[in-house]
Each structure stands twice: as structure tokens, then as C-alpha cells.
Image (cartoon, rainbow, N blue to C red; front, side, top):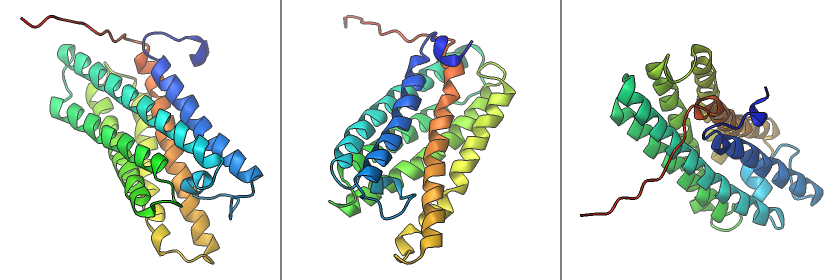
Length: 228
């Protein structure tokens, strides 16, 4: 049965995150393309949300993506925490560290969405750095957690897929880092840097796609208790 037809447990969270985040970049790109706001066929992601009307769509959808990411990361954190109570293997500090680094990544995403490239570029760039660096660290730490929780968390094949996604995101960092030093005429380096940025972002998206299998195994409930 296809994954989108088997919505068990909490898997609706990563499903929504994957679909919504992908739509955010694709829809904004298509609008920017039709509005002739792109200087290159494959621009940097921030460039597809720099001018109205696509900047409005990009900002709104990116903020929703950030909050969906926070909800998914928190649910993942609680899943690992519960798994650790019965199986062990994952140091609590590692789980907590991955969670808070993930939160920083989502915060950076909010900065990118709120402060477009054409408004306050310093804040925009700081948010982008926070998003990319924290995002890469999050995928690396979650890959480590997956191996430490094996075989109770997920299969070995899924551990390797997550490691592959984290590696792709990590390898995309150096080409992205050269962006501030590029001149407008450096078309080749611009293309390499832009492609790396898209690879990193979709590595994040596909990393969350691997959560769907795990999130089918549990539910998360809110309990209210009176303070004595």
C-alpha cells in the first residue's frame, strides 16, 4: 500500500511537511518565472521569494513550513525519548541536542521568510546561515540517533538512507559558502552554488520523508494534570 494511503499514527506530520515544503519552493519558483523576476533559470532559493507577488506566497508558506518542522521535530524527539525508555542506546543529551538544533534551523527559516533578500539582507543572510548550518547538524545527529536506536527505531536500510541525505546536505555546504564572493558574471560558479542550495534543501525534505515510516508506530497525546 502506498504511504499516502496508509495514514497511521503521527505520520500525517511528516507527510504534510514534505508536501507543503516542496510546494513552497515549487509554487514560488513558478510564479517568479511567469513574472520574469528571475535573472537565472536556476536561481538561489531566496531569489524566488524576493519580489512581490511571489514574496508574499513564499513568506507565508515558509513560516507554515517552519512551524510544521517544529511540530515534526518535537514529535520525533518524544518518539526517541519513549523508545529509549524501553530499548535504550540513545543518550538523552544527544536526543535533546538534536531537538534544539532543529529548533534553531526552523527559527532561521522564519528569519529568511520574514526578512526578504531585498529588504534587510543582513538579517536574511544570518537567518539563511542559521537554517543551513543547523539543518545539516540536525540531519547528522538524527542519522547517528537512528543507528544507535537500531533495530528498534527503523531498519538498517533507512539508517543508510538518512546518512546519505545528511551527507548530501553536508557536501552542499562548501559550494553554497562561496556565494558572497561571487561576481555577477560568474555564471558557472553561480550555477554550482545555486544547485547545491537546492540539493541541500531537498535533502532536508527527503530526510523528513523517511520519518513517515517511524511515525506510523505511535501516537502523541496531551495530558492535563492539576497542580496540587
